[in-house]
Figure 1 (cartoon, rainbow, N blue to C red):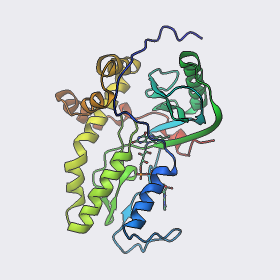
Figure 2 (tube, rainbow, N blue to C red):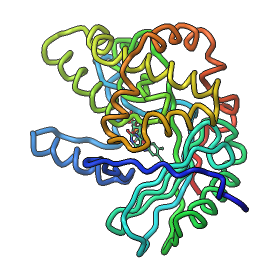
Figure 3 (cartoon, rainbow, N blue to C red):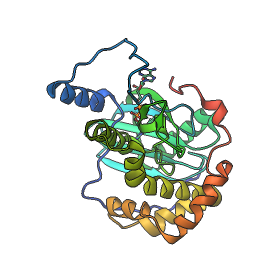
Figure 4 (cartoon, protein in one colour):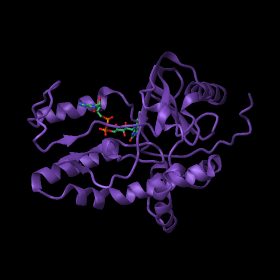
Length: 279
Ligand SMILES: Cc1cc2nc3c(=O)[nH]c(=O)nc-3n(C[C@H](O)[C@H](O)[C@H](O)COP(=O)(O)OP(=O)(O)OC[C@H]3O[C@@H](n4cnc5c(N)ncnc54)[C@H](O)[C@@H]3O)c2cc1C
């Protein structure tokens, strides 16, 4: 298999860290909540007549990720690849960091062939950067993005992906989840209107993400390659990404089209991926 025609685009970054999707983040937040005096109760239904906060995650799959957590003796590094055979409309990545390592295909279409795309991803990184996995453990998950009309539903404040708060370009939602939780807390403590708060804080970013996704779906691999070669190559990744998410005249003009034509900003294989994809 010849990957040699693929160009390499080195980037630089002082602060580009990987965040492993394991219980570490959740546990850390739980610990902080307990220290702040929060009482946690598991396995109990909250009374439905009280105002509550709903943060139960994605309802359906617009993006899925499948991959492996593993150990390796490879030197630290972060690699990303844009290719429809590896990750349709998405990206494949390899993160090696102090022996806590991840390789995955993050795809926005063709979920039915997820195992094929993962296999191609492994082949690619084996051939190009000498990927060697020890003790591999398979993982998978899915994400859901849409623009909610309102994130107050039947009196409850809806947060994170349950409300559709998710970046449609890359499938990143942790910051949205944390941000919307802070806004909900402010609303409950100060009586501020939650819908007004998230409109002011998150709406521009969500719209830009949707316009970016629409552009990538239209231009496919060429769009990703343009982003890689013109926006990321040789740049500080953090700064370049911030620019990519800044609203521009183009994204403002495209957003209404993307919103009106969801078929062009969503995968056609949503229905096939309503179940968790691990295993
Ligand atoms: C493989 C993978 C890699 C990712 N990588 C990144 C990344 O690098 N950066 C990033 O920003 N985002 C990433 N994301 C996306 C990110 O994980 C999500 O956007 C984010 O976790 C959403 O947070 P949330 O709190 O809204 O939902 P979730 O994190 O999904 O949490 C919802 C929780 O609610 C629980 N729940 C569901 N129903 C109920 C119920 N009825 N009662 C009680 N509890 C319930 C679920 O079990 C779950 O624990 C990734 C996603 C996946 C799948």
